[in-house]
Amino acid sequence: MPVSLDNLLVVGISSRALFDLEAEEAIFRTQGLEAYRKHQIEHENEILKLGAGFALVRALLRLNLLVHDQRFVEVVIMSRNSSETSMRIFNSIRHYGLDITRAVLSGGASLAPYLRAFNVSLFLSLHEDDVQAAIDSGVSAALLYQKPESTLEEVEQIRIAFDGDAVIFSDESERIFQEQGIEAFENHERENALKPLPEGPFARLLKALSYIQNNFKSADGRSAPIRTALVTARSSPAHERVIRTLRAWDVAIDETFFMGGVAKSEVLAAFKPHIFFDDQLGHCDRAAPLVQTGRVLLKSLLDDGLPIR
Figure 1 (tube, helix red, strand yellow):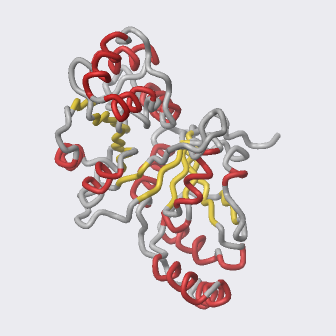
Figure 2 (cartoon, helix red, strand yellow):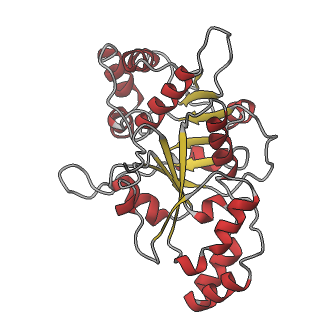
């Protein structure tokens, strides 16, 4: 029987997100494909340095070592490289001892059609076009920033922080704030406090992490190897709908911060996440020098097919 990835958290990550390939990217952009191909083949035995998504991937893969004969996470390398130029990537994976055996090497073609084939729950890349295509195909995806300028010390426990609206939840309420202002937003949230918020692009990921956390709850009191945080610009009275929504989803977030407009960066630096997901450019730009950050892009088309603003 074929192997099924249905019950696993599958992370698709580009080779440039896993490893530092900025010099190689510059060769490709300035000298072309043939120069890039030659460079990769000539240097295929040189181990690549760590990229923006490496710490998160390594931490997630450790989950598979915690319970005998049970896997929780699968990581798939998804690259526009051809097989001919990919040996350096595989050699580096082996060097760092990463349990990654599956790959998509599209030879320059779009990666989006293959995300569903591998049941990808989260796609990470430094290429905006690939991230946008993934989001438009209905897969949670984020555009990674480069590694923080001052890397935080490594934390054994996996820590993931999320923004709320347009990330965990839909952007329905955020659009009211953007178009009508804070008073209309607060009135809307107060009136709909008992109505769960619609799911956003990262709701599925949050629920998958919650499922894994629940698998580690045991009578011996062992702490879960994952800790989550919600860091949202909301404040009272808009807090109630968030709390009730998570309760309706049967999802418990470990730490919640209702910032009320205060900058998120210092809280994030204290929480020390392996990654922080937010949709707002300003929040991401301020957080990126302190913690690994992934920006969540909007869908390029609305349900009615009209371009989004």
